Amino acid sequence: MDNNEFFQFSYSASQQEEIKKIRNKYLPAEEDKMKQLRKLDEGVTRKSSAVALAVGIIGTLLLGLGMACCLEWAEKLFIPGIIIGIIGIAAVAAAMPIYNFVTARERKKIAPEIIRLTDELLK
Image (cartoon, rainbow, N blue to C red; front, side, top):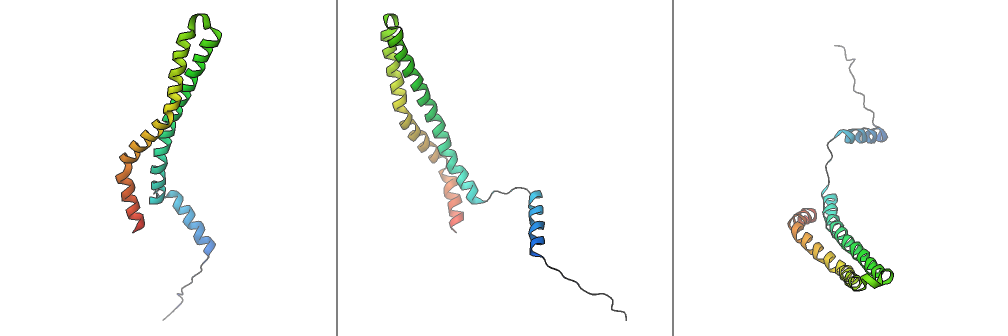
């Protein structure tokens, strides 16, 4: 009986890590639950910020237009300039309540998903 067969084992931690990194490049990307939770939470404030910024910028431009009408073309556009300026001030003042409203609405919309993910993470 010839026993020329033998078992050889070599272990290299760095080699194993490199193999895992290469393998992970080719696996389908799975988002872990914490990343998904963060993304959902950031999405709420991102949308609210965009809406509030748009309203605030438009209000600021209207206020500037109203001021220009009052200062530069006072003989013809003084009263319309005051009205346009007041509309601009109202839009700038409404930006923060709009932000709060959109944030509350979006949080209400995604609340079930957030609760489900947090329950899974806390268990």
